Length: 123
Image 1 (cartoon, rainbow, N blue to C red):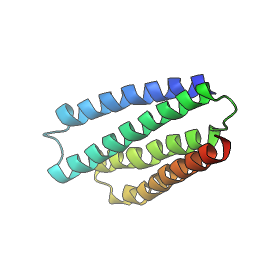
Image 2 (image 1 turned 45 degrees about the vertical axis):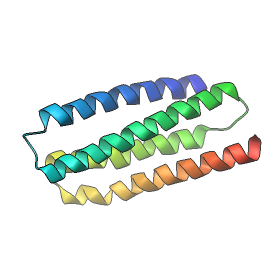
Image 3 (image 1 turned 180 degrees about the vertical axis):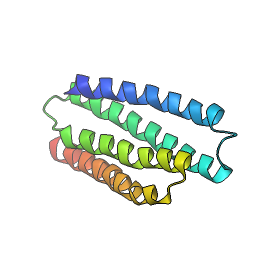
Image 4 (image 1 turned 90 degrees about the horizontal axis):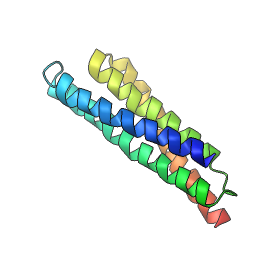
């Protein structure tokens, strides 16, 4: 599982760089400053949680007995729901997409809490 998580994190980190560069260079003159800030927030959380996934992957390799499947799934869901909804909101202006964002935030929070309890209980 650790190898899969590390590989997924690597792809997500590469995507975060590309998506961030697209926002900085491709969208800078295309969308308002407010929407660009929303886009940047999506990129920041994408980066933070892809790095978190890298950490989870390293933990999974170092301590194979740890069950890290759910923190992995929750972080992945959070990136898709939180960052993905902010990317789409910024480029489309569809405010209804903002209703999805908190679900991603809850996924992030649940993933961190589950990681805490997994480490606390097993190490």
